[in-house]
Image (cartoon, rainbow, N blue to C red; front, side, top):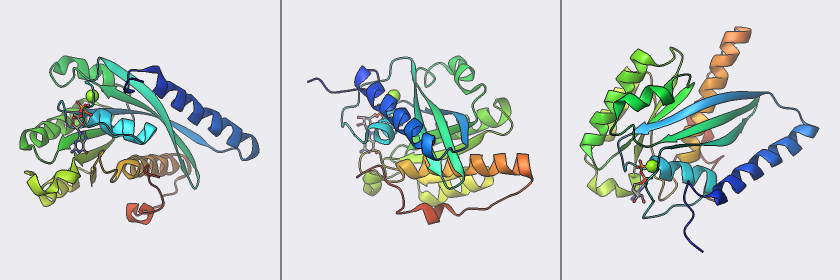
Length: 224
Ligand SMILES: Nc1nc2c(ncn2[C@@H]2O[C@H](COP(=O)(O)OP(=O)(O)O)[C@@H](O)[C@H]2O)c(=O)[nH]1
Ligand SMILES: [Mg+2]
């Protein structure tokens, strides 16, 4: 059997399964569901598709095939007070053709900007995307910065402190991730879901609940 990729139908079967399970669950315990459009941005080959494949399919390929065009996938994160149903857009082409990007990030509620910790240029590119979204995207967009390929820590060229400081200054969620060894993959999506739900609660009920993302550690993992 040929290797499944994000473009092949196998993955859609998994996604459909996810949604069927959700519906069955809802019959017994109806749960408030927040829809959220999330886009993956970042330089080519930083691991955007690999992170998504790891999240949805719990798999990793050393030779991930290039994304063609853009594809979207749904994935629901369940929280204590409801669920966030992400419509996740994995893009290709935005790396080379800046003009394509607004088409993807327009109307997005969240973005994960990915860079490769072993490649400084990709971090510079990530900074560009942060500025671009701050200026042109929805004002309330939640932005997360993912320093991917943490398994290659020994040959890193972007220091954690530098990225953390940049993220802090710009109000971003920040995590270093590895699609390969499955570090912080589900966690980064859950942190976004938490923030989105908190913002929604703040907007609708005037209540604000601060949650520490560290409390999530160990409670969720995409690697079973
Ligand atoms: N070592 C390592 N390699 C990774 C990781 N994530 C992706 N890759 C590899 O990096 C290459 C590009 O990945 P891909 O997901 O296609 O990047 P994209 O162009 O940003 O979508 C592929 O060869 C992946 O196997 C990671 O966390 N660690
Ligand atoms: Mg890709």
